[in-house]
Amino acid sequence: MKIEMEKISKSFGSNKVLETIDLTINSGEVHALMGENGAGKSTLMNILTGLFPASSGTVKIDGVEKTFSNPQAAEQFGISFIHQEMNTWKEMTVLENLFLGREIKNKVGLLDNKMMKKKAASAFTQLGVEIPLDVEIGTLSVGQQQMVEIAKSFLSDLKILIMDEPTAALTEHEVERLFKVIAGLKKKGVGIVYISHRMEEIFKITDFITVMRDGLVIDTKATNETNVDELVRKMVGREITDYYPEKRAEIRDIVFEAEHLKGTVFDDVSFEVRSGEILGFAGLMGAGRTEVMRAIFGLDKLKAGSIKIDGKSIKIKTPSEAIAQGIGFLTEDRKEEGLVLDFSIKDNITLPSTKDFIHRGIFDNKIATDFVKSLSERLKVKATDEEQAVGDLSGGNQQKVVLAKWIGIAPKVLILDEPTRGVDVGAKREIYQLMNELAERGVPIIMVSSDLPEVLGVSDRIAVMHEGKITGILTKKEATQENVMALATGGK
Image 1 (cartoon, rainbow, N blue to C red):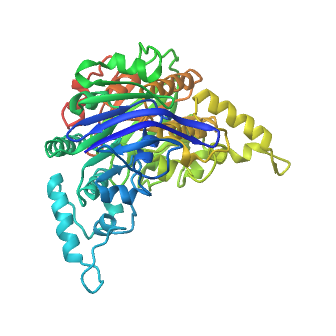
Image 2: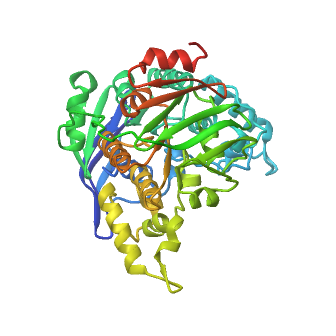
Image 3: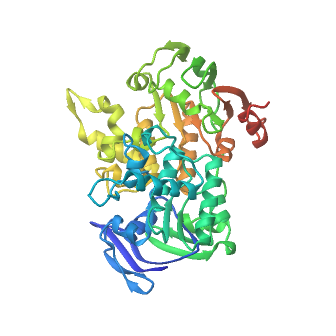
């Protein structure tokens, strides 16, 4: 199959998001689509798969002009789009999620569960995974849920597979398995569009790279004819010489202390963070890093241990109590826990600090709007205005809104769980710079990240966890990839 998208343009009202885009996708090739958040990558693929129409331009498949009325029609034709934000129903079983909208019925019109289970088993076999079909999908790990999403595309005669940040929530083992699946699909003649910000993946598995910026195609090249520096320059329109900006904050007194914390999957966790310090948390998937932070913030129950801020013991049982104590928490799952997608940018940013805008019992809309505009400009949130629904923003811009929300409470302590997941290289540096500025103001920052170079590049010290315990806390000088990985795997 050969897909030719010619002169594709798209506007939402007065906001032009794509302009005269040309893109060719071929069977048996892995074609990377790269660009900053908001460059138009997902929008272009949504037009191809019929989620919404192009304002102008044409799509040809094998030389014949073709449009799809909806994504289901595209799937039936063999073009499947696995989105960055997973489209699953948490309380339904794996089997029900797989066949939702594509149920198989027998001759008398009843669901043919036997046939559906057979097809599901075949899809999982192709992926090389074993996932029970009768469990609720919400009980699976994020990585397993991602594999279920991929398996959906195997249920039809797959010809083109579009993947948007498919490895963002996968373990290293799951990533390697996915790459084997991609290699197998490529051999079978399936064309793959691979949207990712992870340079090492792009150069490992792709044949061609198209770079987009501000709704335009900047360039298309064979992967072996370009390099990281050239891609970054084309993505952001400028040179980025230092990915991790120099940190100048003075580290002072201890602000936050956690002593002998115990939860469902962690035990005897103790650490402290000082004014102006960024304490990184490293470890393998399932080590318990996120669970520690959720318990500190009151999202999960803390079974034992104590927390102090400025030397004073505090009790936190709910997130509202944590916020009242000055703790901000950017969660790992921004879609489910960090944002109200139907709400505007303004409503999301002001949500935890609403009381600050109430004067004499009335919400001061002008002060709130000015406050949100200031934060949005500082974080370079790409949006039409502060009233735009957060659900309409790209993933990276949604992440910036979550950050703005917590900066808005003037936190005493800021916890960031995977702050740059799904964020482009230019926006990553902006987030690092913002973290440095907050540290310079004396804010202690705790950062959980699965990106080891990020942890090494940003942190003043690194706490490493393994199987629910801190196995070591390394200084900047001691922190090497080898030392971190040794502690993360239970060594010394």
